[in-house]
Length: 511
Picture 1 (tube, rainbow, N blue to C red):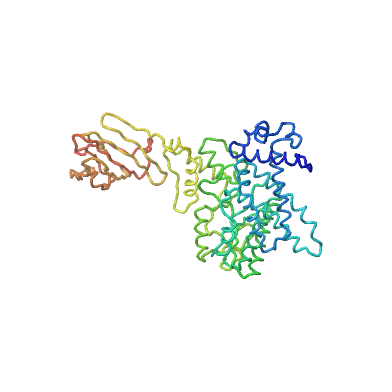
Picture 2: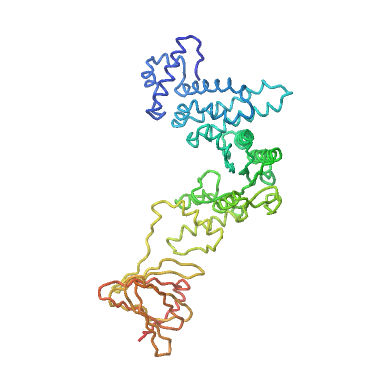
C-alpha cells in the first residue's frame, strides 16, 4: 500500500515517482521495471521510495486513486441522461494513462478500484430518493463495465464516436456481457449495468431504433439454471429491455441463446465444444464426466444468418417451455430457428472420428445442414499447422502408382491412379461395384467388354478435355497410357470402399 502524504516535500516526491513509473512504462514491460530504476528516473533515494510505497504496484494504485477521486467529485454533477457520455468523456481525458495500464497488464487494478465506489457514493441518497439511488448504482457499476470493455477493445473509440453511434444508428446489436468474472457480483454489473447505460444513451437522443439483446437460456432460471448468478443477471437485463420497450415504444429483440459453437471459439473457457475440438485436434487429453449430458447447440453461421435477418425485420419469435424453445410468431422472445440436440458422448465420438481420418481416410457422414458437418468445420479451425498436411499411402510399382484418397461409409471412395507411358492397368471386372474414371492429365484409352461378349467399347480420354467414363458392373475394363513420354493421371471413384474380405474384383483381360 502507499502512504497518504500531506507534507509538500513528500507530496512532491510521490509526484516524481509517479512520473518516473509512467515514463518507464512507455519503454519497458512492467515486470522489468525495478525500484532501483524508478528511483534513478525520479532522482530520489530508495529510502524515499519505501517511505511512500511498499512495492511498485502501489505507485499505480496511487495514480488510480487520484483518478477515482476526480471521478467521484464530478459524478454528482452529472445529469442521469448524460451518464453514458460522462463515462467516456471522463476516461478519454486520461487516455494515455489508460493505455499505459493496458499495456502493462494492470487494467484489473483500475476496474477493481472503481468497483469499490458504489458503497462510497450510495450514502448520499436518502430512502425517499431511491430512484436516483438505483440510477447511481447502475452508473457506477456501468463505469466499471465500460472500462473493461473499452480496454478489451483497445480504447479505439472516442467519447464523441460512441455517443454519435447511439444518436444516429438504425439498429443496435448488444452482444456485450460478462460470463467468467472473478467476483459473482460482476455478473450484474456487466450484464445489467452496461445495458442500462446503452438504453439511457438512446433515450438521450430520442432514438427508438430496434435494439437486440444477447441473453442466455440460463435466464429461464429453471432446472439446472435455477440458482445461477449469471442467469439472474441476464434475466435482469431482459426485463430492463422489455421495460425500455414499454416506455419508449422501441422494438426490442431478446434472444436467449443456448450453447453456441463455431470456428475459432476460445477453448478452455466456457465452451465444451471449443475445448474438445482444440484438445483433440492438438492431441491433448479431454475429460468427460457424463457422456449422456444433453446439449442444445447453435452454430455461429446460423446465428449470424438470424441476426442479419433480424436487421431486415425478419427475426424469428418464440416462447419457452422450461428450457425448450417453442417457435411462435407472436412470441415475446426471439430465437435462432436452427439448433441441434446432442450429447457430450456423441460430440466426442464425432471429433475422434475426425481426428482419425488421416489414418483411416474414412470421412464421417456429413449431410447438408447436419450437426456433424458444422462440427467438422469447427474442428478444422483448431487444427495445428503440422496436421494441415498429412501423407497418403502410395502403392508404387514399375507401372506407376495407385493411391486411395478418401473413403466414406455410404458414398464410396476416391483414388488416383498414375500410369507410366505405354502401361495398361485394370483387366478386371466387378459383380456389383461400379466406378467412374476421370483422366486429368495425359492421353489414354479406356476399354470395356461385357463378360461373355466379344464387343469392346473404346473411349479415348485426355486431360485437355476432362470426361467421366463409367465402369459398368459385369464389364471387364482397362486403361492404357497412349503417350510415349507422359504419365497418365486418372481420378477414380468407386461406389463402395474396397473390402479385402469381399473384393468383388475378378481378373479377365479385355482383349
